[in-house]
Image (tube, rainbow, N blue to C red; front, side):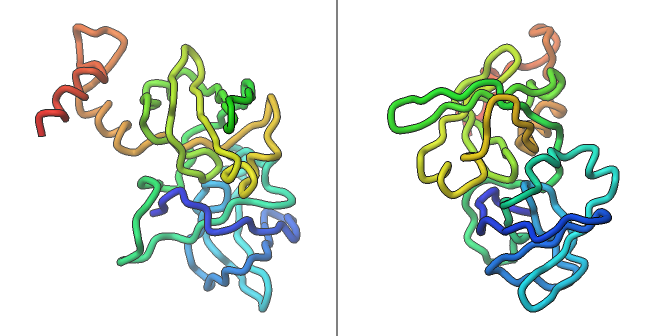
Length: 206
């Protein structure tokens, strides 16, 4: 389990034969779970100044491998008693998103992320989403995409500074959105289930 708050940017030393070797200030132990660009991976080797994780061919098919170079987001798994910030992140990438457009918005930048239609139902206005392992708030949900507003500090300290139109990103939807959707069987037929407005009204009563 993770929080979506990046511990640091780890430097990619090499990626050979499914093994990704990284250099970071943080020193994990062999067998530790660690999120790299939002994907939960297992540390299989540790040296004095590097550690290595293994990515199966199946993982490489699912993940935005174009971002596993130069620097990557790194977050160790939560420990009991850790301060909880961000939101609950499983490290299980649902799908790939695509940067559709990037627009300056005063002292921040709007990133519009397109995603497969079957996952859009889990994207909630003012809800949480994880992009390459970073916990973010959804500002607006559109027909085939959603808008994120990113402050300069976040851009400067993440690989977001490398994003351009067409960049693929690892996307994990909010776990609770998935649970609620399936619990209430929400679908496009408003008469057959609850809308997110209905859920908001129910939650407001507690």
